Every structure is written in structure tokens, then in C-alpha cells.
Image: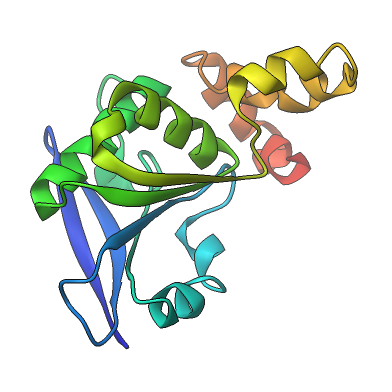
Length: 175
């Protein structure tokens, strides 16, 4: 297994990504998008199995997780993260990839697949139901709406930044 850190670009932002490659360097890509407040190391236990199955694996750090990937306008919207993903695929010359998303990364994966279906061979979402199913199921499990409000909350500029930093990042530890 060959592993390296690569840097991906988009509109002046720089994202680090761990690239894992097995014996075949032309193997299809699996791109793994981490959730919040997790980070790219969330997929460390899946990499070996994906390589053994014959894939290359790319695990990028999502927007805002590194100083160089924080946009001046503080745009951390789902659409901006989808645009990051598509720009990374273009930069890598990866026409079609398998996409895996965990939690918030799963939400981004669903949106990316809906907006750019031709770019993905498959989509796997972990700990994130399909948005249509999620909305329909809240009738039966209304407490899930409360448990998932952090995703909507994090889309509110300045307020979420402030609350996240209060009391030495207590809110993030709570999540």
C-alpha cells in the first residue's frame, strides 16, 4: 500500500487529502467524505478493506477543517462543499468515482449525486438516511429532528461560529 498526502485546490483554498493506492494505480477511486465534528481520520479503519477490494482511496479534509481551507466569506454551505468535491475530481482527472459519506459527509454525498449523477459510480451513506426518507420518518421518530438540528444550525453564519467557541468549544464536545 502506498499512502501520501496530496493537496487539492479550489478558488484559492487548499485542502489536504490522504491518497491510498494499492498495486494498481489506475484502480477506480473511492472518495470518503467525513462528518461533523469528525475528521478525515474517521475512515482509517475502512481503508485497508477498500484497498484489498481493488480501489484507490481518497480521504480529503472538508472545508474549514484546516486554516488554508477557510474561505474569507465564511461559506460553509452544502453547495460550497459539493462544488469543492467536483473541483477535486476535476483536478484529479477522475471522471466517475465511488462516493462514501458519513454523517454530514453523507448529506454532501446525496446532494452531489443529485446534482452531478454522471460523476458517481455508486453512493454509500453511513449514519445518514436519504433526505426524502429522513423527512418522511420524522413523523414516526420526531426526536430525530432535534438530534439533527445541528446540521441546519451550522449553516447559520456567525451565530454557529460564536456558539461553537463559547465555553472552550463546549458545544462541539456535546456533539
